[in-house]
Length: 209
Image (cartoon, rainbow, N blue to C red; front, top):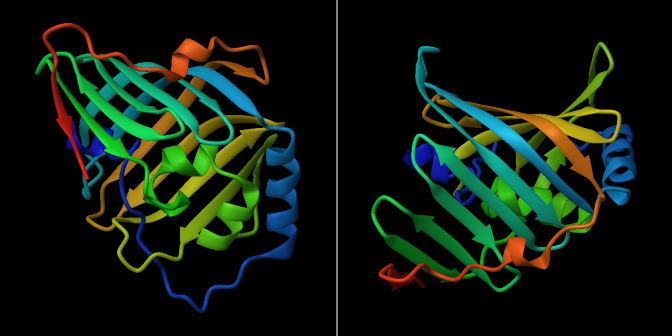
């Protein structure tokens, strides 16, 4: 479960800084994201160990509104919510009746959540963007973070048209998280309440740094 949480809050690991951004890839990703203001979807997340064995599976729903609004709700195997409201990051665990509240201080490279909800300028400054690869009708981007204190080696984003339909995260321990999105809605009206969190009565709230 800890790796599931790092989808919403974690650090990304660097590959050699000699890698250069591909200008075609940057332009193509910028073109996609310029028209990408909000998204909602259901997701399935599978995490594999370094030997390729399946460790766990989680399902849930997500929403984002750029910039700096993000909601990642795991419904199975137990309810957890990771939410960025523009000012604070919330991590709510229903089973533990506990919520952690932290002021947002991380750069876009701090998490895939921040990556998806950040601006293209932030993304370009924090990642080396590799040349996209074509997979039938899909386009694959590999983003290599420039943060030397990272936990992840790279993030792959897969788009079908202008829709993000899959992500893959590689951490430096050899684990891989594969996320697929379904019932995707792009740039549709969203309820602002999606990005507000009020701890349920009886929840232990921990204020983080």
